[in-house]
Amino acid sequence: MASESSSSRRGQLIFVLGSAVLVAVVAVVIVLATGGGSESTVELSENGPITVVGDLLPAFEGDTATDTGAGLTAPILEGQSFDGTAVVVEPGSPTLLVFLAHWCPHCQAEVPDLVEWAESLSVPQGLNVVGVAT
Image 1 (cartoon, rainbow, N blue to C red):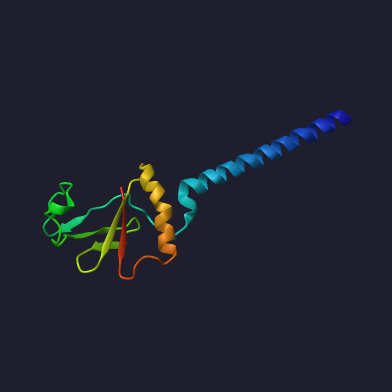
Image 2: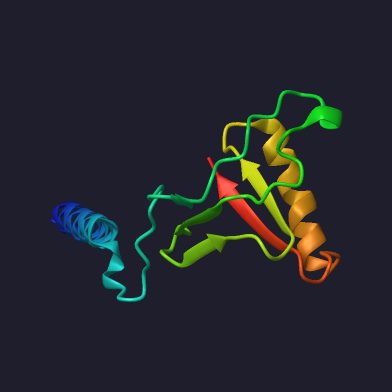
């Protein structure tokens, strides 16, 4: 009779633990499927429309001495960042466009240097730095 009681308790314990694990797994699946119900999450867009206003610059032929685009006014670029914030690149102030491809090892190697440059406040005053993820 003692062995039946011990076996019965062991079965109940296994049932309770199994049920608790099942409830926890279902709760995790629900939270992951619904995004946790957070109202403060931002919908991120991988890409969006870009508007180009003005004449395009001529293609660079590889020789800086004969670059026909040197000295010409660049067109205005309008678009949005990943979080929907407006981004405008226009003539009138120095702008550095940094093109970064997620698959490019050279681009990935540049990111820590750019972050360090920005965090050390070494970016020249008045320089607008715009990162373009491709």
